[in-house]
Length: 230
Ligand code: NYM
Ligand code: MG
Image 1 (spheres, protein in one colour):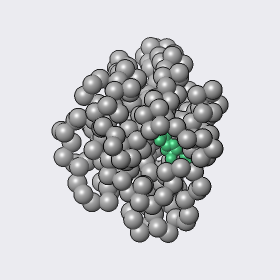
Image 2 (image 1 turned 90 degrees about the vertical axis):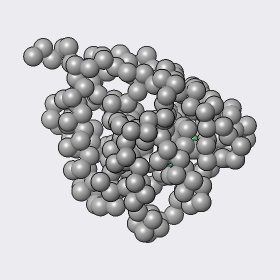
Image 3 (image 1 turned 120 degrees about the vertical axis):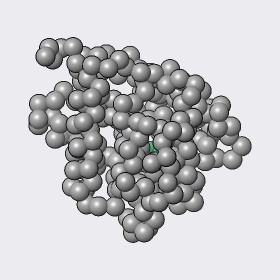
Image 4 (image 1 turned 120 degrees about the horizontal axis):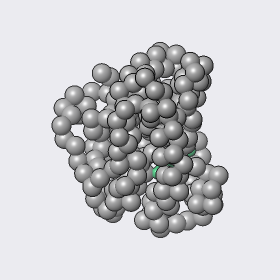
């Protein structure tokens, strides 16, 4: 089979703060690289751009921004990466992305007076992930995992609301990963799913988010009220 015709997979990690996403992203990229895959790590917010620096200042509580404004900046920070992402994927590079549109919607929707439908619109047209790995900690393990940092949103009550909203956004591309285990255990679970996805999508067209984003109700197996262990 001609390798050049294969596209890369868009793999997104989501979850509340301190679920272990960043550790797992690095582990996954390292292993895939060692196996000879073309793979690149990305992270949102990307704090290196001009927009990213505004977001970073906001998260560090150095500036105040109206809730809709910061929401649009987070989305714009993804839009400024679209061309690069598309080119890499079409050239056969798998992208491992630490947070994406679902964080964008869930964190804004956890604030009072935000309209859920409005919040989804800036994401419409962005590349749709092939696989969303949602890392979920049980409350027990979460409370033992230590203090949150000092940034905006890093409070237990707010994070609980975010987690509830994440659940509303789950669709068929999601896999809920039990993040309670050791980094190695969690990695093994993720690795199998990612390998399958890379194979599965390599000859499929890239998809974009349409206006039904987050309206997929055909996933009973993901909507249980357990701690997300599958
Ligand atoms: N966050 C992240 C948002 O509120 N909206 C977004 O679109 C994205 C991508 O930024 N608490 C929030 C979630 C995090 C914070 O992310 C910074 P990180 O992964 O801690 O750098
Ligand atoms: Mg953080």
